[in-house]
Image (tube, rainbow, N blue to C red; front, side, top):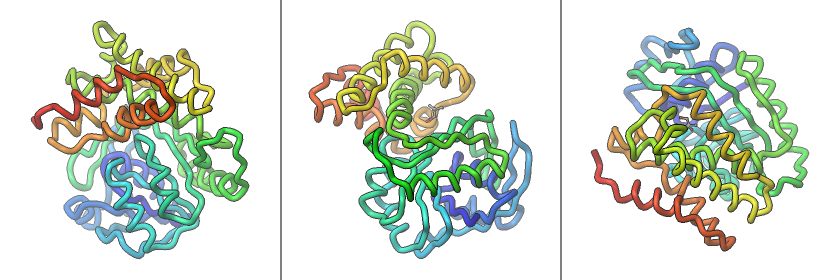
Length: 301
Ligand code: PAF
């Protein structure tokens, strides 16, 4: 399958690197990283060890392939969608944090899939990504409505899932991602700002004194999901946080890495999205509001 990975940072490079052993992969990313890969290939280390030679480019216009995997930061989705609209793809699949699929659907006229990845990834240096933990990819047609039926998107999801499995990536294909998207939002709403503000690894959110804060953020997210018509219980959301935090206990969340590097965080696409939708459905979400304000108001380090 011809696969374009749009946004070859840590996660994009890892997923692209794993796929490149089996498929025709093009990575779109920053110049130093792309130049290093052109010169010596992409080295994947850690839980998976391989060196592969995907195609690379820094030019985001006029790209083509069977599928484009979108792995840019949530805040860069609108710019990515605009660039992708100049190219040609059969399927678009977001593997991002936050609710980004809406922006892709608005700009692109091909089926949009939503995906979640529980692999841990860390960009060690240009040309070298570490897999800090094997995980699972879950993907399926994007829809807000858990009863929606889009045959074309389902067919594309099955094909993309098959391509991931052929590259030895454990992949779960769902009929739709409505519930999964909210569950993942609850996980990110609980783990990302708490780890970024407290400056701790993911495992610490399950312990006192942080756990009550993380649990409240997840419960509020589940309440908004239910108000929007998605049947996500408080217990399921809280259990998902516990499971992900435990399986990534030693990882530094992407938001902690962003804060440390002085980069813009994904707070608006995560807790900000809970606040926005909470207001839309009349659900009060004080913990998510507070976490959003604290991350937005933090001084760059
Ligand atoms: O953003 C992240 O870091 C990840 O989505 C997660 C699940 C919190 C694990 O670190």
